[in-house]
Image (cartoon, rainbow over the protein chains, first blue to last red):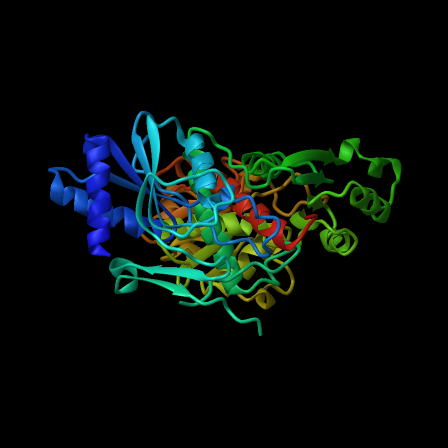
Length: 170
Length: 313
C-alpha cells in the first residue's frame, strides 16, 4: 500500500505542480489517514507539506430519513478558508459516489475553491452518480453485496485492503 | 471497536428518563454542531423538508428564538404558535389542539406550557417527536443540556466537579433538569437559597442544601445562578430586591471563596443587582453568553437526533 500511496502523491504533484496551494480534505473516517499519508509523501518529494483538513458529510447525506437511528456526527475541521485553494477530496473507497456528492455540497457551504479533485485508494465500481476519481490507487472488481475493508497503520495498526464476503443473514 | 451509542427515543420530555450515555451522545453531537455557527454559510441541509411546530403557551423570547435558529440552521420549515394567538384562549381543549396539530403531520413539536406534564400528554397523542421546552416547574431539558455542554467545554468533564446552584430552587424547572443531569454525570451539587425559596422536601432532590451563599460557594468549580422572579409570586418570598441582593446576590467579593478557575452561569434573563452584580455578570469568570451560543448547538443536536427515531418520515 505504501508504494500505491507514493504513486498517488507523485501523480498529484505532477498534475497540480504547486503543492503550496493544495488542501487535502479527508472524508471521515478513513479518508483522513489517506490524506495524511499522501501529505507525508508529498512532504518527502517537495520542500513543503500540504495543508490537511477533515470533512464529516453526515449532515449532507441523502439517506438520513431512511436509515433508522441517526449516524453519529463528528464535525468537519478545515485549516482555513478554502477560497481559491486547490482542494483534493481524499477517501479510502469510491463506491456509489453518494459520499462524494455530499462532500461537494458541503464544500460549497465553505466557499469557492479554485478547483476540486478526487483521490481514492480503491475504486470498487458500482457508481450511482456521474462521479469519477482523478487519482486512483487501485481499481478492483467487486460484487455489490461484498464489503471492502481498508485499514491504515496510523489508525488501525497495519495497512491492508480486504474484500469481505457478504454477511450472511441470520 | 464498540458501536457508538444511538438515540432511540421519539421524544425528549425530560432528563430524568435519560441514561448517562444518551446525555453524552447529545453533548458530543452538539459539539459538532458548534462549528456550523462559524461557517460562511451557517446552514446545513440535514432537515430539509421536515416541519417543526414551535408551540409556546408561555411567553418566551430566548428559548423560542434559540429553537427557531436551530431549526433554520438545519433547513427545517418552522411554524410558530404562541398562546396569545392560539385557539386555546378561545377555549379549545389541549386534546383538540393535539389532534389538530397531528392532522398537520409535523415531524417535531417543541412545546412550552405552564403546567407540568402537558408535553407528555401531547407526546402520547401525536406521531411527531415532542421536545419539552419547559413545563411548569417540572423540567427544561435543553437548558440543562446547554448548561452541561458549557461546563464540559470549560472543565473537560462533569464527574467530580463541585457545583452550586443558587436562587429560587422551588419554582425553577431549570434546577430539576440540571440536578438530574449533574447527578447522572457524577457532579457534587449544592442547592442554595433562602428558606422561603427552598422546597419542603429539598433533601429528597439528591443534593446538599445550604441556606447561606458564602458557605455554598466555598471551593466550588461552577456557580449556576437562577433568575429571581420576585414579581411572579403572589406572596412575597423576600422583602425586596435590595434585601435579596444583600443576602443572596453574587458579588466579586463573595465569588472569591470559590475555586480560582470558577465559572459563573445564568440561564437568563438576568436581574442585575438582584441575584448577580454587574461586575460578576460581565467579569472574566462569566460564561453566560457562551451558554446562549451553546444553546443553539444543543437544540440542533436534539432536533437532529429526534428526526430519525421519531416523527414523520
